[in-house]
Image (tube, rainbow, N blue to C red; front, top):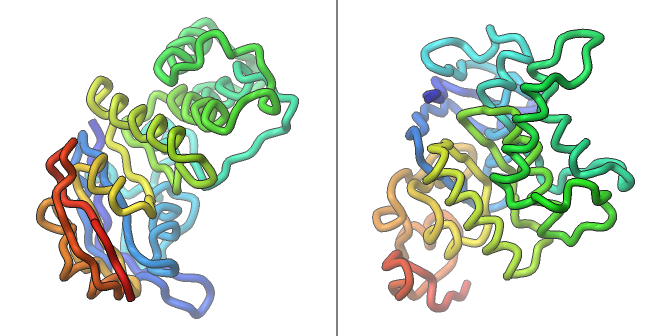
Length: 259
């Protein structure tokens, strides 16, 4: 499995610095939730971890090697990334969409090989999309569409999955469906999953580790039972919350809050 580390990261756009001197080690085989108020740098950090954006200073290391030293296809074989609200032409077949995840393994001027077809079939099964592979994107529900995109990144056979708000724009049932799918991928396939998530109760329920950002710095990191507290919510989110225990998971949860 792959170990992802950020060392002395400074991240920003032009003259604006969003994340300052960040040092972080992402635990392997866990679901790590990036939480924090808007503008705290969650999505920006995810873009740097994926290699889509270069830091102003510092390095991201994967198994002790600089991520920037890897060719794009090498990087894609190790880290798969799904942006917020991913899109594709609406007439794209689900199977073709999942096939896009095999680009990291394709040689120039060659189409999909037998090994690619096997990987596509496996990804469709893992994402619960068997039987829907000949549907077009426009003929899927919101939850099915998100599972199709998750199948696409599963086809990359990467150890690390990065997802930016994978439940945004979904109703509550489909949010739970996607989060339970990610938990299954983590437990059965031992994927390391790093996701940006806004629903704090869901973060506490489904994540093994929470990484809490505010103003470009890690304010808290650890298990939900240690991080998800009234003190953290007051300091980071500037809300006054009353906490309790989730009867299903025994994890902390917000019962009520105010500003």
